[in-house]
Image 1 (tube, helix red, strand yellow):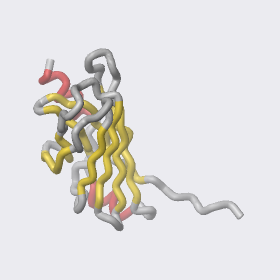
Image 2 (spheres, rainbow, N blue to C red):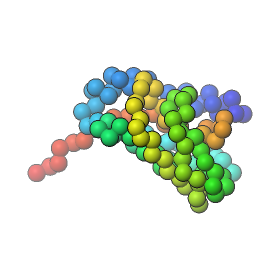
Image 3 (tube, rainbow, N blue to C red):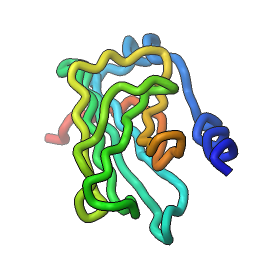
Length: 130
């Protein structure tokens, strides 16, 4: 079952970070992180990356694991940091500095089990209406 989850986690993977970094005029990226039912809860989250700050912020909720559990933050297959300990099924992580490479996939993992994953996408900032 773990192999199937890992395969599913990489199925939505998108590449092309350097090109997207150049073409994204806002320099802001977001990923909606979705996962698989875990202990009758559906974990979810959000990742935000600002090119100017070179920092990746991740927020995760509805993770049905014990308080105090620390989860891995991954970019593609590489561990890039850890979350703060879970409290009431929620946690955050700030990866600073973070240099976005070619792989746009961000994931939160417990050992070899993906909790939530998603690919970073450019957020276009529209001019405010006058």
